[in-house]
Image (cartoon, rainbow, N blue to C red; front, side):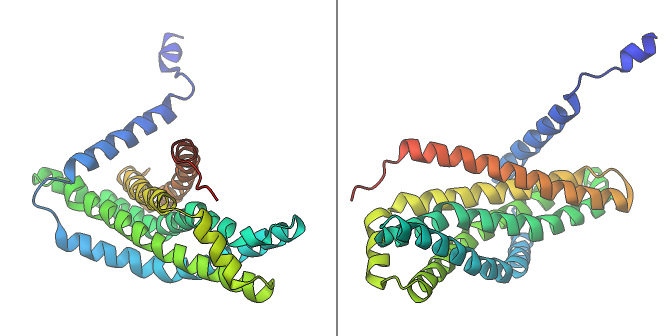
Length: 264
């Protein structure tokens, strides 16, 4: 009876423990970034890997996403007699919301899953333990270059998605819905402002950091064996997606409170 009482756990403690360990790893990564020597070659290789597996899918997803937003908003603005604001509404929706989310989802899904699998394979082969025995910090040697690569590629791809999405929305609004190019661009210039792009890049920066850290965290803590690595990859993608949407809600709410809308 006493043994059963001693083994009883409070519900939710396991989840809180995981959150604490994830926060600890995030802090350790931030502390390890300025340390020397910096793994420049590893970082460049990881940047190239992230870009190679995400740039084409990201561009291909951005075009239909921008088209859907432009077509939906164009149809809505036609019904209420505000078609001249289609450009501003669709472009701001793409730049502020769609672009960083598309980038982060593909970086986490394609690049982050590969990072998690790589780190997890090293963990079950005891390479991580061997590095620690040799006095090599695995966070500085393996995790930091991958997290920084995810951040850099996310920020750069976010700009690409913004451009491709806005151009796609422009094309579908003007060609398929009969909108005028001048009205599309004029409404965009009238309502868009520099902070819109800034918050988009800040979101991409944070999303890249979260995707890299979560992938590394799950890779460092597999359940055991190859199946455990596969489960860790799935968990990393799901956890990253949940965190991205929570962060997006928080940043959007803060942005709307801090930055006033541009007057017409």
